Image (cartoon, rainbow, N blue to C red; front, side, top):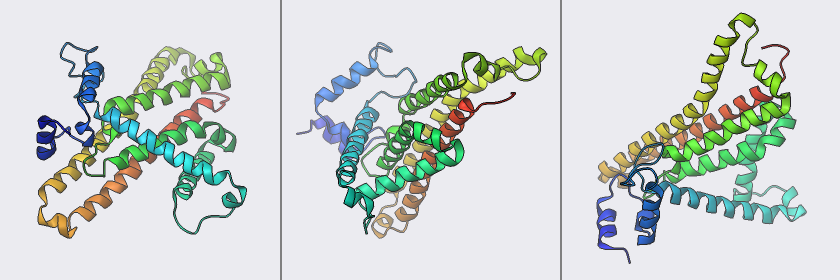
Length: 274
């Protein structure tokens, strides 16, 4: 059973509450262990914000859900006869195929088919994780893991590192650095500083944009669910708000993945001059 503190939390539904708040006291110990290395009170992460570890539990839940989707899709794909013929209704394997196919086609148009096939596991995984994390916030009692800067920053840093690692691998270190210097030699020092700053800002903007939009979307949804009263039962207010939430969920997934495609394609593209 949940402790009295958990019961009170469930009844009052504070800002940082979700169904994961009802986990046993061992989860609270895990929360304290997460925050303790960063200050004596254990109240803040390195990136700031309240440490309740709910985004960690939410992210783990999303990964388990995606694992289930992957196993269901693999089961269908293992039978060639079933895999060739499309299903008449929308099922989990069909959704995964449509989603992955949409991401691949967008990547192929922007990066080319060869690069799209190579980077699909990276960018496609980001698309799945971000979309399902965002959708989780539309379910009452759950917080989207993407409304926490620690979650989005981790993914943005992975994209940042991959961009430069594969850029150097594709073009060589010397040629890759030349892209930071510009075509005019006497402006090279200034251009280099500007380019470095612009590249360092990329993961920050990726992470902050996604976090801010999902935090605002979840806050608006929570406010309407908590204040509309009788309108909730009729759906007059909640349906438009949920439609808007679905739009935000989809758009923010597209923005993160499209920008990731742009950054990586720019890094691996060969230039005659900068």
